[in-house]
Image (cartoon, rainbow, N blue to C red):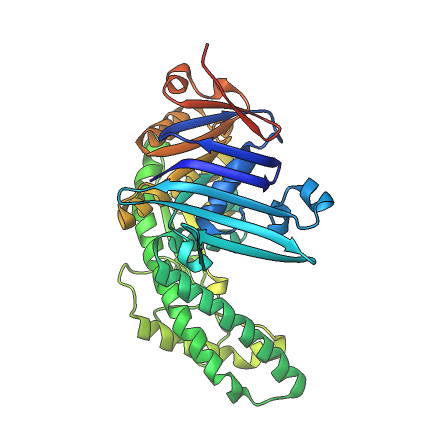
Length: 403
């Protein structure tokens, strides 16, 4: 899988870009704030329909357009080649009367975001990927969701339904507390939450088991055989056991994370989830928020049994995060028989020579990898000779020839 053409109109600092892209490695060099990351972000945006950096879609529109144009807009479009087809993806963002409209198209036909996610698969490497290990649980949930939604449309639909039900249920919880309503109004929403939440939990559990197997191997290579990495799913309730009477709803501790490889059935998880919701009902009404469910999941990075979030060195944390990202590529390839487009944003400056070599091997195996750097010397002459080179300056790309 690779992009043959990319077009940006009024996207971030790009007023207009039309670029033919080859397969293989593509290296973009430029000073900071010239548009290297914005270009990678645009490709990832086509892949997931969400920005990796912007809080709102409006922030993606060129600021001069927002300031001067009556109907400011941004458009990202790409032609994608896979093993079996060639198609065009496009996303247009328009601000009209302070309202943002987003139109998503495949071959000129309007589609829902759900129908587009995963058509173009990408894995993006960023300097801040270390936050996958050191950051809050929400960061790790986003990583899992982004990976799974690109390869499993059923998961993405279940996650979307779960989030919608969660909003409705939280609103009802607040209303029940305010008006002293009857808790039996929660029955329908509990069932819907458990129905979709069971799918989300089961898929996350299976995916973490798969990622653990793959990441373990990569981490051995990245650590030169010195360390052993394990990934453990930490759901907000025990998928294997109903809550015990007269106990608080548990947040599963690290020692309960290492579940057996056999995963409970959807019906079992659903019934256990309902039991935890019933146990937490009084507290949830009092607080006006759902306390258990996949929206509170987490997972652990353990190196030789040590939790990297709490006790890992900076180097260990970075290597653990890198292992997980590389495992993501393998997982996608196994699920779809396509290698995702790799997007590497100035990652070499954070790595030592050995880990740089491992990344270059990874790039060489991809059908297309787009990399950024502030200095050509971040990549050796051999790599640069077989890569397509561009200089990026103020939202403009100029082909560069090695001298």
